[in-house]
Image (cartoon, rainbow, N blue to C red):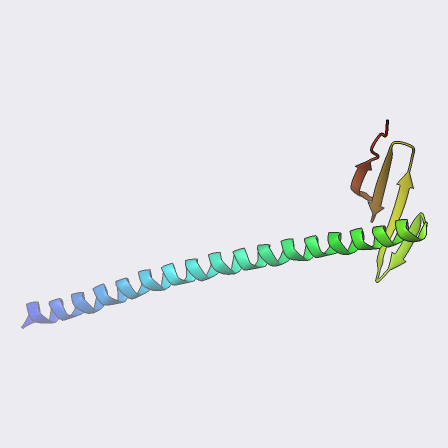
Length: 102
């Protein structure tokens, strides 16, 4: 009788342990997936910001302006005889070398 009672308790404890291990794995996987989703979202946001800045820079070049601000995106175009540098938020966004013609 006592042995059977111990076996039942042991079985319940084993089932509880398996459940806790499964729950831990599930929490780990969900955390990992959410972290990846957040990283992709941040990267996409940064890429979209750069695309918007490049579009504003293209508009500035098209209209012949050195500085242009549209939709809270401000770019500064620095042009020399050999290259064009596009600045956005105090950082170089892109540097373009002018093609030499012979």
